[in-house]
Length: 311
Image (cartoon, rainbow, N blue to C red; front, side, top):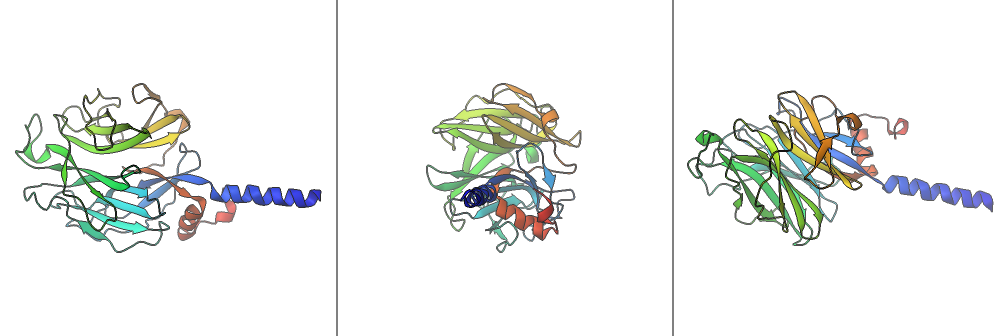
């Protein structure tokens, strides 16, 4: 009888372990024509590189795959968007997957086709709005002479735009998402609770080039009173991981050629998190999401990693 109880307990523990989700971090290496990479972590703090490209870029004028953003929909499908060119494209790349190994045909989503002078479409970022049951995609574009120039050249004076979709087949007309009065790129929406959203965004003006915060009761804003910077200068590409009651904000310190990490509970007060975290060398601008251990094992198997010898 006792043997049967212990066996049942082992099975329950094993099933619980298999169903536990892990943290995933989209990634790319320079040069950006290599394709989509992944990091993974059990705790959201210590990351390992799978050392494989899982999807090579096939759309866009320059066919790069920068700033990869992935979100998992309520049906378990992973949706993926990325920057497909430095300049010249008036849209971004899109693909979907059930397991992060096998991907749909890549598509080019021409979100700025009605703005013929658009210089670029940078860093599309996905957010699933579980209230409106739709996906929000936010990106940065420069339309020369549209906004006061400030210190930026006309081909580098960005503002943030967005579209929404429920199926990635039809998209709402693109609209202005944020004009904070300065050149802004790399926007990440974080939901803390009902009617409580945070925007993490890069001020791309010279000499700032650092990361700031906005707050709103809606994912689509408005986000008034953008904060003073919380990151050093020459930082970009923020990604946010929620771990317990804390958030770790990862960001690309591109002058130092490393990934910076700060932690916060309220997005007002930040402290250093580098000693309690680790990020593999070469990792560039990605986003954090969660996936099942089954999905991770499929990625590891595809990368030739023996899953029997690892956690």
